[in-house]
Length: 379
Image 1 (cartoon, rainbow, N blue to C red):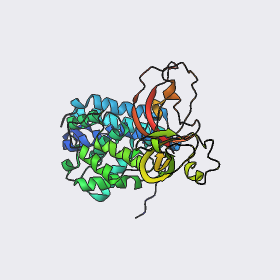
Image 2: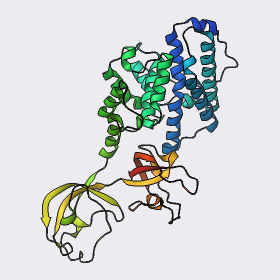
Image 3: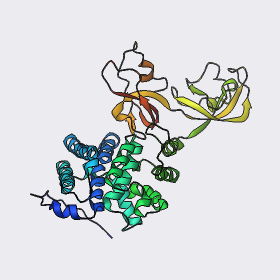
Image 4: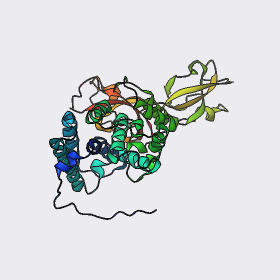
C-alpha cells in the first residue's frame, strides 16, 4: 500500500461540542491529553534533528507547543471524567497544538519519536491502543532517553487516567519491543532519538523500565546503560605495541608519535600505527613480547580503542549520540574549568560523538555559558 502526502490549509474555524466530548468514555479524553503531553518529546526530537542533521526549526512553534504541554501537565489533576470544563480545557489545548503545527508548516512541534513508536504499534498490534495512549507510553521512553523528567510525565499520565505500560492496553511487551526497533523505519526522514541505534537489549530494558517504580531520574539504569554500551560498541580496536610496564588493561595514554631510536627498528610500524595527539585506552593485553631499544623491559602487543574524552561543552549540545564539532574558543587559562574545556587528546574543529552526559559543570562559567560535562569520542 502506498501513501501520498498532500499540502493542506489550516481550518478557518473549529466547532467542538464540549458537552458531547464530556459525555464520551473518559478513555478518549485521556488519550487526547496524552497526545498533547507528547509535545514535550516531539520538540526535543526536533531540536535534536536541528543539532545533528541541520534541520530548520521554528522557535515560535516550539515555544507554543511546549507551553501547551506544560499547561496541561500542571493542571492534569483537574482533568476529570465527564466534566465539561475538563473537556473544554483539553479542546483548547488541542487547538493550540494545531496552531503550533500551522506555524511550523508541519507536524514537527507535536510529532516525534513517540509518534513513530505509536504508528509502529498500529502496524504490529492494530486496534489495541488509541493513538494518544501509545504516544503517551512512547513519550515516557523518549523523555527517559533525552534525560528529562520522565517520572513527571508518567505521573501526569496516571493522574489523567492514561495508560503508562503496554500491558494496560493489552499489548505484549515483546510487541512493544519490536515497535521500538521498528520506529526508525517509520518516516525515516524524520530524525528522532529512536533513530540513534537502539539494540534489542536496550529496547527490552526500556520496556521493562516502564513497570519499575523505584528508579529515579538520576540513576544509571539498565536501559540507559544499554544505550551507552550500544554507542561504545561501534568503537573499533587496533593492535599496537606499548612498553611492557604500561601494558595493563584500562590504562589510557596519548600517542605522541615516533620516539628517538625507533628509526632503525624493524617492527616500528607495529608501534607507530596510531594517530598523533589522540587518547587511547588499552582494552586487551596479548602475550606477544618484543625486545625494544626504547623501552627497557621491551614491548607487549595490546588492543587499544580511542578512549572517550571528558570535556565541558554547551548544554544544548549535550545529547547522547549527537554529533558535534568541538570548539575550544575560551582562552581563560586561569579558570579552574580550563583543563575540562581544553582536555588533552581533544582536537579543536574535529567532529565527535557525545557518548555520555555526566552532569552540570561544577563551577559557573565566567562567560555566562551553560555548560555540561560529557564524554565524547571521535565521529
